[in-house]
Image (cartoon, rainbow, N blue to C red; front, side, top):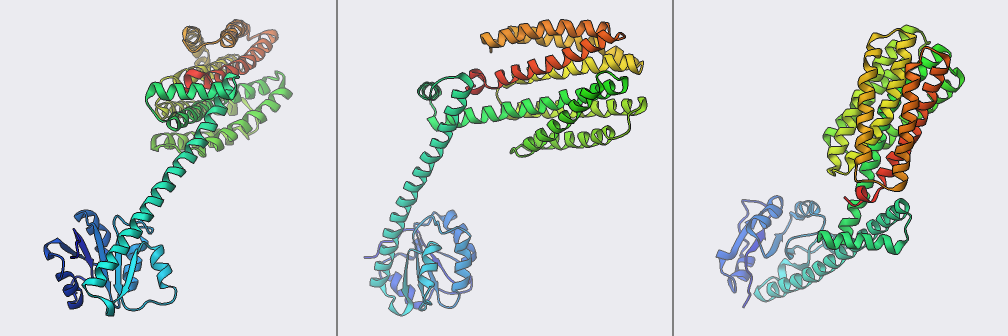
Length: 428
């Protein structure tokens, strides 16, 4: 007796009736109440909706319609598929197999016995192909996890200066603690590093916006003008490199929009930087740089939220100190060179923000002997920068201002990288 449950019969069209030969074959062993109908266009949706256990396609002259429908599922069907049709062309069998047809027979041979054999072949082949696909998927998963594990180990080895075995032990311990697969934890470590790097680079845009104004003010005032031109070229290249890197990331809608806004602000600033320097052009550069600063701040915040890790906040805080050092130096120079009242009014708030963030960094749990030493050095250099701000109307004060602001950028670049690669951030 033919035993078929939830059989879906595919016919050329909705108006096509069940062929007599197929009806007789099914009628000898199957209750019609277990049979549903579909067309090539509704095959997949009907199979999913009805939970069909098997599919029989009866195609005399409408085979191309069936092939087009099967191509949509990429050769992977939810259940065995048998085909009854007119004789096929020479390459027809290979094409049908590639599209997920498990068994075929000619119309003229159809009866209850041959249909039973056809469905049995389809079940056996579908089960074997399903097992092979499951095995292949498992192998791909293991191979993919191995790649994430190797990348995560490399990050930990580089960041912590440890060996491969110790790095693997950290990953395995974290996986056991979080009750996650080792591959999942490893992927999280790699993604944490990627987000921390993105936040660092977006934060650099804040600093560079202010640094470019400071360097323009230096050039206008004749303060170490040759070096200022070299640093301005390097800073412009650094901005461009960061935009290229950030554009290559898979950002969500909010972060992608913030990146586009930052790019627009940079394009406007770049135009102003190309103009012949004068007090009016310098003021225009300052305004456009502040627009980039605000856009970069929004981008950094969006990236921090996208990363969804609280430990990334420390990377953002540290990176923002670079910008504040440059902004303070820039505003001091503009206040002196252009007699800018707005720039002078920003000096005290910027100093307060820098000192509050420095205190927060000193009290943060993410620390190490190297980080504590760098923070102490930054504190000393900050005092020299403040002294330069107070003496900005003298040549010695301006020179100290420039030296200390550049030294603080280097120090907080190193500190941001240290936080970016800290174990707490990577394993958060």
